[in-house]
Image (cartoon, rainbow, N blue to C red; front, side):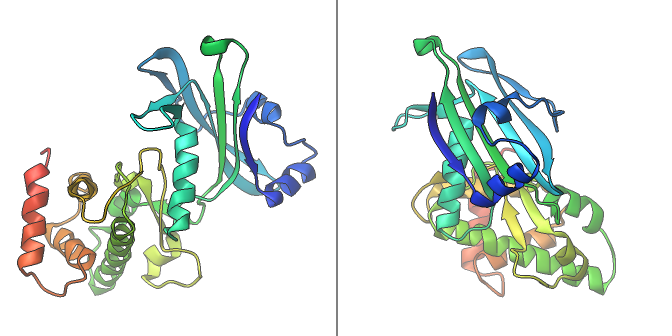
Amino acid sequence: MIKREFVDPEFIELVDANNEELLFENLWSREDPWFEEPNIGRRDSKKAWSGVSRIIFKGNTFFLKKQENYFSYSVQPPLRQLLVEKEYSNIQLFKSYNIPCLDFVYFGVRKMPGGILGKTQGILITKALDNYLPLDKVQANFWEAQGAEYQTIRKAIITSLAALVAQTHKSGLMHRCLYPKHIYIDKDFCETGEQKTFDPVCRFIDLESARKMPYKSTKQLRDLETLNRRSPSTSLGDKLYFLLKYLNKNRLDKDVRQLIERIKKISRV
């Protein structure tokens, strides 16, 4: 039984043009190669799993995520839901605040017969970010390049990234898994430092753990600490530049120093 479902009209046209019928069962039954090894098991079920495949319809690339009994739990309603449901809701939440992230074209959840022991299955299909690079690759490929031109581009990327994180936090949101691999940067921007299209320079992915919370919540510091800790190839100078832009400052002052100390205080290193 289908519990929830959303379908983008343009995606329906692509599937129809591919001589396929857009049904949950058809998508679930696809045997596409896994893009990466599936995650197996959750705390209440070793049979729970989540996997992602890269699929193409008429030259358009998408990522198809399928989950079975891969639940997230909360003390507030809904008490239990598939992680793919949570990600779908969080993408909608981020978009409501105009925060760039993934674009979804299909979402569906169904409950198979069997009462409490029945399987709950979910599907989320998002557009591939083919013209973007994950920040960890950008750091590996461009961060240590020398010359004034590369320094200008690097500062432009850091400025855009800081603005995105600041916008997120000012909107009362927190990513909660802010690894460089979960931030995507426009390829052309990485080469020139200039925005040539209306597409966002930076986008978030992997919003399964994102959460709404008050602005300036101490918990939001965890995003900054995680990004700092997970960016070992970034120089101290560039990290300071990020914090300056995050606070919209032009120089090191009391506010910046306090933020640095607060991040150090919660650091796991």
